Image 1 (cartoon, rainbow, N blue to C red):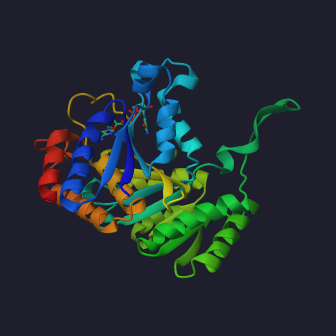
Image 2: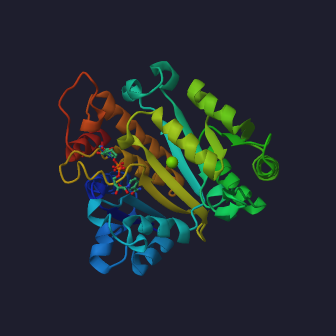
Image 3: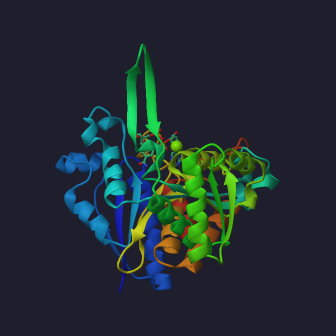
Length: 364
Ligand code: NAI
Ligand code: MG
């Protein structure tokens, strides 16, 4: 059975970076015998322009049926004044919601050649490879009751941090499954010292571990102490498992350890499908970068590394994912740089497609 992949390039630099990913996918087909059945559709502002909605029902159906969805970026000034329901971002939100993508994976991986871009000293981040698994569909961003109301003569703002046992257990399973494909270690972070939901989080993660993943090394840390450890000694971590709110902050903090926005991939995973593979959406962390769109300046690496994550986590092609990540490392080591990766020492930046050329040449 071929591997099925839906590509949604989107807006702005999305199509530019995705064009380079297509070349990489073709390379793996031709040289590594990886049989991909690739289809393409619209998402975001371009989808709104074509059929009046940021994601068509047909595209949504395709996304539900494939092994993995790979998305570029959505949005841009052209669509800023649309109604809320028509906004390009709604296309992305619809995908996340209808595919029920509850586990958001944000790696913080530091490529040696870029270690000087980090906010930390080179030796603290060189070789860094950690993964934050953030619960994405529940917790304080969704809990009821919520809102701002009046109590007596003052206003009260309310949000509810709520997790069910099954919501915790399913994202914990995602983290343990990932850990088995990495260094086999999970550190779970909550605030059980001050939050009852944190006690439940801690206990459920421990129970899932003990009954289903006893082979994985599990530790627990309070989330505030975890934040300190991420900036003090980030290399101690393999997989960090945490809730929606703490994960939002900790993943942004960790991202800064690695340097450039143009380098950061992500994945959002849901429940296993009939073939055992999880529902999956892969996308770079960056947006549509309207300031550089259409100029061939975008760095395609975040999107290419998102495809490497798809190889690893949807297609069980860990060795090929290693190959692709190693090639990115090599090309950067050779000094090939898009404009976003130019240091103070300057130099001549390569274009989006020249970065693709360099990556393909190194793959060969
Ligand atoms: P952005 O990530 O698009 O750009 C921020 C800055 O980083 C810009 O200066 C941009 O040129 C640069 N940059 C981003 N990716 C780059 C790459 N691959 N190579 C080189 N430079 C890169 O964020 P911004 O400017 O806040 O948002 C622009 C649009 O993108 C907005 O419409 C926003 O709503 C949308 N957006 C979409 C996201 C998505 O599709 N997941 C995520 C974030 C923003
Ligand atoms: Mg955030």
